[in-house]
Image (cartoon, rainbow, N blue to C red; front, side):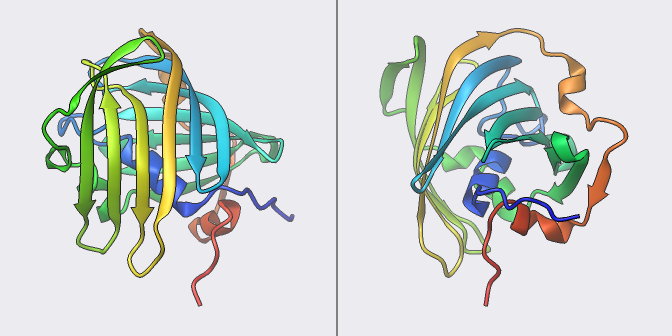
Length: 208
């Protein structure tokens, strides 16, 4: 069976992984409250609109790329994520790399830079700048609600020995409240694809 090449870059996957980390660490993007929202992720010159559902320690991102629905489930306590392709009844499992943890540390943020209202939510703006031990670097800004919900992220992610890629995440239609537990678990009866296929499915180029 031939699988479609979904045009989502590896920096986008890193960005999503940065948003879900262990609940006991209470890191960037791991809010104190469950919520759902509409989301727009822009990586380079591509934008992807979808939905995000979150509880402390886990997130679910739903979107369609090239007309093909996909779901990314991130579970911080296991340091794992799943790219689910519902139409193909298949998924790929991946682990968060050290950079995702280090770049999500609480010391990544600057002191508060001021307050802004984004999509009707009062937020505090912070500078986020850090280079991880593996060479991955992030440079940008994040706007967090009092509950730690990232209403907006913008900046660049640069892999080691690579070029910086601009990214932007914006949330709208935010609703705080309990979320069904089933949203954050892998559906049954799916075919597991090799982890090595992740780069191809995400549209990443193989290094030469």
